[in-house]
Image (cartoon, rainbow, N blue to C red; front, side, top):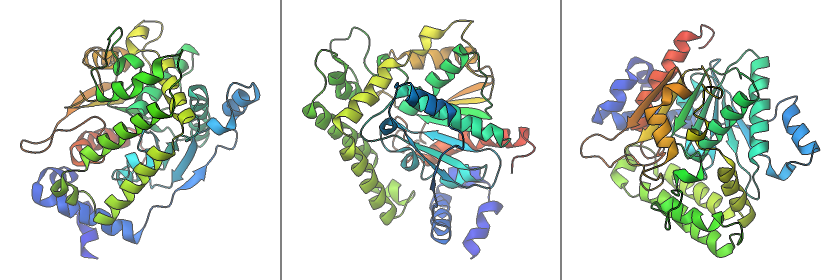
Length: 369
């Protein structure tokens, strides 16, 4: 099929920045999807030592375990995706799947609906990274929003333990790494939409009930639908059936997260330390692996203006990541502004810095395809 031969021949950078070629990129992608549809299977490390030890000690339950979905790629630089509160990790990057698979296998960590454990998630990451290291592979860990906070917390815990996990790199997109990122300390009323949704969960004396959960469902649905309003832009990104499947999947995830699941996800956020709290020589850097930190031009619906993560990673990122790069992702003049963690609706804006980052990794690792 002629369309398929255009992808390697054309520069991705040109494809993504020349308006007439954006629909062509979508045509090539959707044609490939029809010829080779996604084929992800549940994955578990052969020796999940850290996970089993935690559960055996009664510090977490099997019901709090994330499901790991694996899709086989062509190279030797796998990517582990940690998504936000919603969508699930697989949906969060579904327009980036084939890009990731050019470098290696893709692992999406899907959080449980009826529970969550920060300790268990970190243990699962321990086991997955160790399993890949045993195969001679160093992964990129790709964290988005809440998932970026999980990644930062895991890296901090590794540093405290004196461990140095074998990583090819880390990517941090619109990090929500502590409660103060969305609800300013001491503020009577949260300034962000997400902060207002999470505020009822933060009162230990009155656990959030079904009314608070339903309100947060409404907020997350509204945030997703806000990105889906530009019909002309969506036609450049995906087909109508793809958008319908995405809506059904995201909506299903939002509705199926139980009150317990919502409370435990927010509790994990409460447990995370603010990056500014460990700005200490003994705890930094978090890793010497290459790092890419991406902020959207419009973070204000989610991140508070005084968010510790914004301050730490925009002004002191080299302390955390000596080989780190920080970029603000913005839309071209006349296009809708790039919103918090908008990897679906602004994939064309996010792709160039991701391409450059992964390109450098493949160049640095001779075994990578």
